[in-house]
Length: 185
Image 1 (spheres, rainbow, N blue to C red):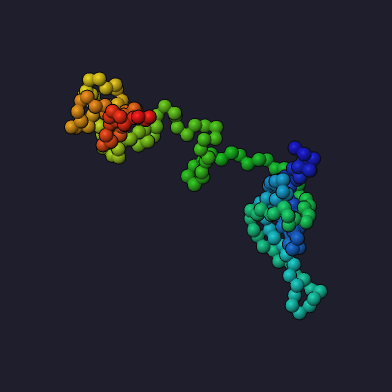
Image 2: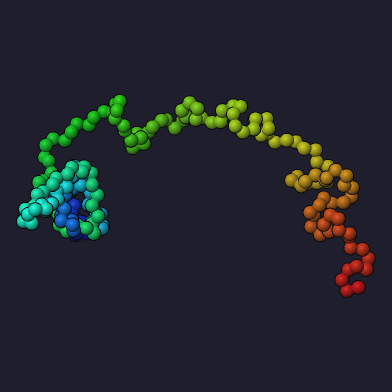
């Protein structure tokens, strides 16, 4: 951590007063900051001075409770400590129950990895995709002489012609090169 960050980090959990560029003051518990000096305050209250319409010298201070606030570092003019962090005993850990949520997956597994919850173990029979019998490989009767993976001959194709798309053969419907039709003749 750099020197400036350690200087800011020493005030974490303190009750602080932050003045921003429009002369408002925020008093709250200093929770966090970042490299831009954006500041997070909890239990925050805003104080601003309002001038009276009749008298110019008379100002009154208005207080507003805000709660959790993020202040942009660019607007902060000063940050002063008002009170140290509370030193009382820590709150006992409360067990989760109705009305209190707990984060899942932080230190304890949500469910054993060996079994999935009901309904999530896989596809349900009869719903969605094809039936299991349709997914089985089919044994097709390939004519002799064709290697596996080659398409079967279309119906009506003479047995001596290679299937369409074979290298070195003219495309279907194109006459073959007869005598005297080659290059250089």
